Image (tube, rainbow, N blue to C red; front, side, top):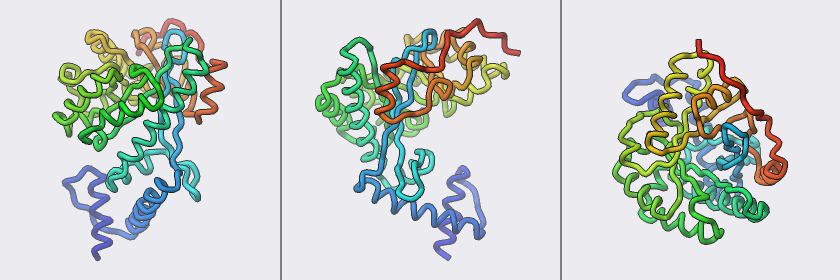
Length: 303
């Protein structure tokens, strides 16, 4: 009975909390999956099963790769390569997002050092790394970041740390203190999925933000939904007012790219350019610059 009630409770939480769910047999399978994932995550840390892939962020007008976002993957021995959406929430419940995050940060900094040295300084390349609420609440997280920069001999401006809006809302004071300490190190800071959560203009005033990443849900409808186009255009104009750069996520075709260029978006990211790649494939990509992007034409009006 306790096991089944626990399964119903987790479903209620997943569906928004403050609600009631009645147990049925399908929940038992989900509960067993949660248990298996939890046990596997603990093993994954010690067995070095996590991998980091990188998705290019390109200059919208030229297609030049300017940065790469580090994205964690779990190389499960039986289930293959697992995307973070299938295990990060469980990792947070178990309290292991901080060590996973530190692994991603260290791996990304090491990769960037390699790419920078091969490039011989010709490219102002940087890397973006997502950081969790648990990491930001650590008393000396800024020292961890500083240690990584020193270990890999990286200029601080080459590292951009991404935080979601929800993290800022739920832990505003602690996050503000942590972000200001990080900013004093010289790293850049980004709000991820901007517009999808509890957007507040006060973020741009209270937090030292360098980049706004426009959520893919708005980019998807930019060419056929007037409302989405208006929101994206407004975010870009607002960001530029605060001397903040913009990255549009989830770009999947030339039409979306053209619309974003017409609105003045600074950078873009998505499967139209490249899927997330292992570090060795990124090295080849940086050498060839063979992205599918072409210089966009004038965008058609939104209906």
